[in-house]
Image (tube, rainbow, N blue to C red):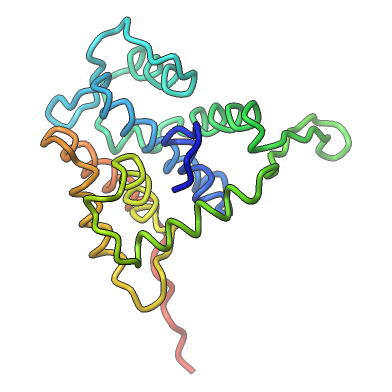
Length: 213
């Protein structure tokens, strides 16, 4: 994916930008959980997401906000955290992307009374590039071991949500499994990613059945 200061949850937000926010939020949350696990700040305790150190911080407000939320809440499994108050993380990522100039926050009033903020793309080129490279990596010849770890993680989580289709004529699910092995650099991280993917699969829409004539 294009170089730049985008975090894993921010990349995922842009990869699934066209989806409804209620569908975006779990994907973005999964990305933040995966990044905290990769950094060793959240550890897997028999399927439970547990803070390694209550005083640890990353310097990233999105990740630190989630770390604080997990630390102050009752213990939950990884797949529960995929959706539990996930909009909290999505909103934090959007604020971060506004500060980076990728999004623009437009204020307006609902029914002419209630204040609201709508986020729109300010850097459409970056979003198109992310989508184009995602499709190429899911369907192209690039060896999985040559895909950066963070990029592989983003693709695997986006695929698990059902919001990132693969190129026509490809085998995206088989490719996603190969990328999952690339993303899971340790057995502990592999266990976490499996939990996150299962949580995202629970949020994916059911296949539409063809209607009979």
